[in-house]
Length: 257
Image: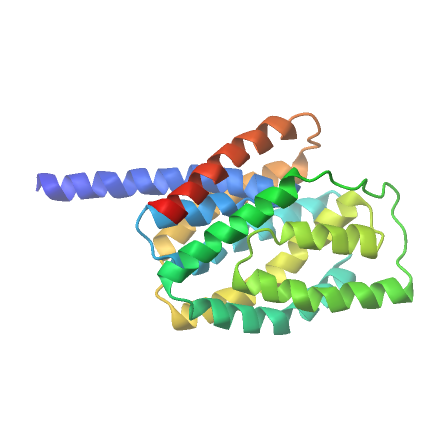
């Protein structure tokens, strides 16, 4: 009986930890990107095989982006016609990427995850180009270029998702010349589109841990809602520094322990 109670208590603590992690993940993903560099390693450290953690993480991404899409819509930042066409272009790449990711052995996935986290960490540390401040109507050439890029971004989103924000932001802001708020509004809708497809692929091939996904999802929903409703300027710096320290610790653990 005490063993059962201990196991139940441990499970509750894990779910609480995942919910808290989800809040940080959702907040960071909507503001810029990189939040999944917290959620996926956390599940791996709780004993979840890497490939399954990658798939289960998509269960939390879904409510995060539903929350953000709704928040942007209520604030008047939405163009569902363009968002849907961009999101549709990610689907072919997502199908290929997710199917490939579901077949990667978990030990190899952990090493791959660590390498990807190093790359994303470097990207986060690089000086970011100035974003466009005025909303502009994209030219036909820029619209075509943006839609073509979505196919490649869909592959990355389906395969790993981590760092996809750092691909979507330049594609929408620099290539299509959309202002930063409009960029974020499209970004969360696009991720919502390909996440539905990714979940279907992973759920059909892997035993996802739905309990963990729900706990993370409660957190990501909250974090995404906060990010979409806040104008964060000076407060982002300390969050990024904290995230960097945690990510370095994750990378060392994945590679050497």
